[in-house]
Length: 568
Picture 1 (cartoon, rainbow, N blue to C red):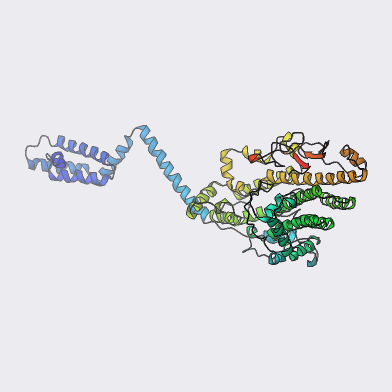
Picture 2 (cartoon, helix red, strand yellow; picture 1 turned 180 degrees about the vertical axis):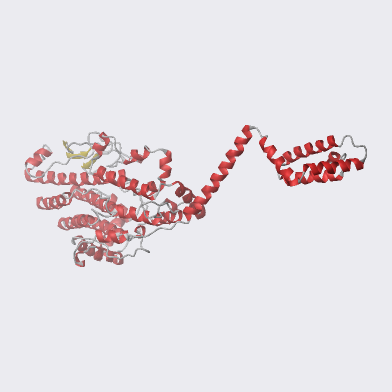
């Protein structure tokens, strides 16, 4: 009805012509309606003086002939309407056009980076294995014996009691036997069931203990596996039986407590020596994971030794033997070594970036995601669908720094971290330096560009801090042993550590990395105390800090790290 009203005064040829033009315009409905109204008005004006339908028909055909091809007229009309747009509308349209082009380019770029393939040239896994393989006979390799432990180790029996334990240094609060043995300073704190289970666990593992002791006497520990470039990524490297070594170390610590309880203090000392020697296999130029496990084992053994010194009276000869062995261990002055970890970095880059032959290349989303799966990063724990994860890594890779910049940045972090590892926490605080603050100083854009780098970088500050804790823990134990020796020899306690040094009981007074001064030694009404300023780096008078639920904790950030006396 509407079209009939619009065209009722026009001949059929004019109506068909106008409709054809409007059809060929291929434009928005509103614009087509405007053009149609203009054409109708133009024809009506031109045919106004015609009296008959024949005259209108003839005049309309002449007008159509003058107009020309309908498709051309439609094109000209469309262009005219575009030119007549207001400036703001043109600006918006151009912006959307540019955005559309940008999105298309980005999509094409995402397809491009997703299709990238790595170029594998260096077998970094084998490089690592070679770097940690000394020129020695296999009989000197402790790892051969460690690998046998898994076959003979017997897990302790579960306890029927449900005794909730206070949190210890490892954050344990479970009720299993190993946790109970780690938590208790004295075996007298165990129930009859727990004591019987501990004896049975040790008896069941005589072969495990024998292997562990024999392994601890060997000078080296290396992984004898061979790898090929294509199939052996550094992420899938089989580390040397870390869980077996850790289990055997806990077993030996419990064996030491049981030996001492039964009056065999020499046997207790030998078990402690085995733990110290074994943990030393994991320290030095190895992966961060290995070094951290080695430090954790040593720190546990220090705590066990203090428990034994608190509960039992060792002879001067036994104390001297403990001190001499510990001094040999601490003389190595272990700090975290990041050199081996660079093999991991180089292998990660090789497998997750393309290579144009000039050191550049772009990140490969699928390989990046797969590598993070292999190192058990948080992506393995996420609830996101795998396609959503892949899309996320495509987006990250699209804006990621190229291979050369990525590698240089990580190298700079490792160099700085190694430098900070040789600097005490006290000095770093005075200079207001930390890797965390360096990362926090980055702009948001830089954090996005190097997001993949931040993903694989270890927590350098925490790792470095743990090694400083380990060193002062061990050095303070040397001083404690020396004080106890002096007390037995002279029937009194030394007035100071300087007096202890002057008497030849220690070679040097430990410097507290958390104060920059000598470790604190004080006489008390019950004996003596030895402590560090701890993580808060101020003197709280030898008062140990607390953490959640008010439980005392040696390395809390609100008190001193008290090494002696042992808290109960």
